[in-house]
Amino acid sequence: MKKHIPNILTISRIALTILLFALLIGIDASRGSLYFWAFVFFAVISATDFLDGFLARRWKVESRFGRVADPFADKIFITGCFIIFAFQQIPVMENLPAGAADALRWSLALIILLRESAVTIVRQIAEKKGFDFSASKFGKIKMFSQCILGAYVLLHSAIFTGSMLSDGLLAAGIIFTAAATAGSGIEAALRLYKAYINQNTPA
Image (cartoon, rainbow, N blue to C red; front, top):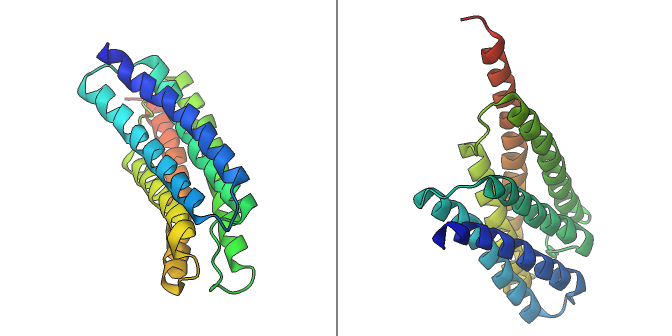
């Protein structure tokens, strides 16, 4: 039975992600309590992301389904959330200069979208070539920073809106996460290039 638990967690993450999207799209900016529940959803989904991979490795029950479904669930969750944040103008950062908050939200959303699209292509090429393309430290740092930022975006919207300090922390977090996301995409492309060179270099 336990060999199925990581995959069940992955599937449940996709279902919870759809519910979170519905909540975020329908949320009223004045309803702080709903933002708090969105924060709870986001935190639970993030926890299942780390838990399913940990259990699969610990119990040695990694599967082909998990290798495909887990990154797919991650991409839907993170990319979808940050695109919705941009469209819904979440979070409100009223202490930033006019237009700065929109620029930060949309820049991060587009960087995440481009990175995930590019890495999906790179991963498909790597698998066809038989290269090892398991998650790297850069990818884990990227995912961790995205999860922490996303959770704080919703916590800020629930209880810290209007705080100059919180606005500053958000701006710094968005810039760091954008850099980590772009950097992990570049690192993934370089890994594919190095693997290709090594495969085609005579011994």
